[in-house]
Image 1 (tube, rainbow, N blue to C red):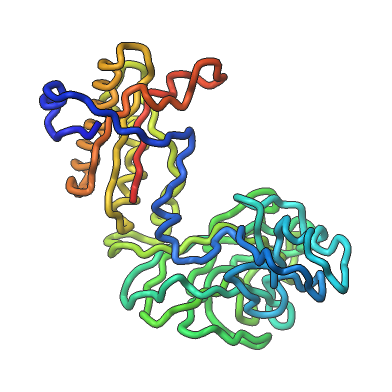
Image 2: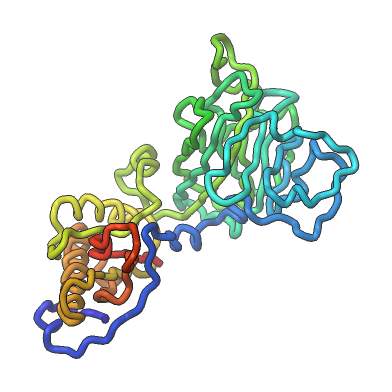
Length: 361
């Protein structure tokens, strides 16, 4: 049901239910749609490719990306279907057994100066606009196999033309990790904000100078580190007034439905804290609409549950408006008890049906 601004009007109209797709963890479609990076999670491969020359140079399988320098590595189940003329058994396994952060694909590269440096390049979906700010992140993990050092010299480089990176290039990174990335068990976010000149059409990931900062994991100076990369994001921002890069990078981008206590509809303190992440996102990035979808469990009648779901959504809307979200962007929908994420016989707590979902487009 599309709910009027007045709570009183809610009781005067006949209810029509708006059905929405629900899940325990929300797929945040806005950031996916706005991402300027093609094939950002390295899931798409050249399915028509049947043969490659060398197994140690397998990056030709990856769509939209190409080596920036030397021979970075592609990791994808599709490689098992490629016929390599020169095979190198267990070549990829030596670098580490980390699973991709999401999906099935990832890439790997050496971060080094001189002859061993590697990187990848892609053409952006559209050129960057002059003077605009862009949020960038990628996730990296230090290969637990042969890496003997870790570094903070890993990030992104933007260019107007397809870059010609060589072993002696001295190109500064535009976004660089703020700390050493030494974790071999999880994924660390390399993140920052970039102000565009307006000519940039390409992005390169890696390190493209001669003297990376870092340390040996066994003590001593930096030598070489091998890193996996996954889930790259580049989004245009509004003018990030009074924000620093660290604040933006700490912002949540993976949102879950906001759960309410049984019988509660007010945006109490815990609810407000969860909503603040959405509000920050809407204030920083360009959005067209914010749909607030209220839900309820089936404890009462359908009419009562629809009222409860509407009141939850209205209170969430009111809090967002008080925090500066443009009211014209917001649409309120009452789903009542028609879209449970916890059904009869499920091991999950049925109280999880008492929730609000927020869809940003």
